Image (tube, rainbow, N blue to C red):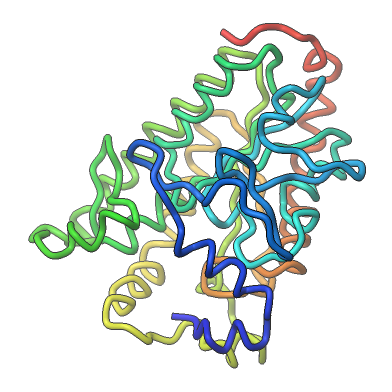
Length: 313
């Protein structure tokens, strides 16, 4: 995997993220970033969600939900902005610049579509106003599977904190056999999110940002940081799974987008990365700007209907 010692040398801000990563905790059965963190590179709110910036102000997720108009970004560490210094440089903040209202960065480490469906359900029941849009990344579904080679069609793959225990006893960690279960899991919960948004009149956009393994050629910085190289035995399987199953997973997500009638916003494949899964600040801006080109017409089509302060169902 990426050489984090070298990354921290070349990107000093990474020390802040690696320190926070060591403090990842639990909220029920899901992982959470450390709450109320504040350092030179980023800050989190009382629930462990990263702050968004908009119009010179800093917003917690709760602040966004209390706004007259807001959006929700649901996803794993890739949407959190792991390794990106400055809350203003995350996808949520860049999107807020484009859309003209705050976007809540509701991202959790390794979050899968089942976790995020529960999170969205809780948000809609606890807020007076529906979001103007929901942007949803299912990359956490794929990440958990590639790390563990395991998937249940209802409950998904083990999270990061569970994998060490599961891998010691798992005799059925056959990725070929379990990949159909991953696709069934992702389809079940992505469809549930789509139904929830449709029932509440909320535009939903699926997000697709490919990673380092889809690049044709690494940059000099990426080579210096050891991206794509195996440093630990367990990464042999993880990387092999990503190389083999990434494209079929992306193809399945595109099929779901068409079947559900939900737009899919994609980013370019030639962006730059901090590690194998997280784009750097420049890459994140390029990905987000490309996605916003797909999202903005959806907002324009929704028009002023989203401005109404109607209660969520």
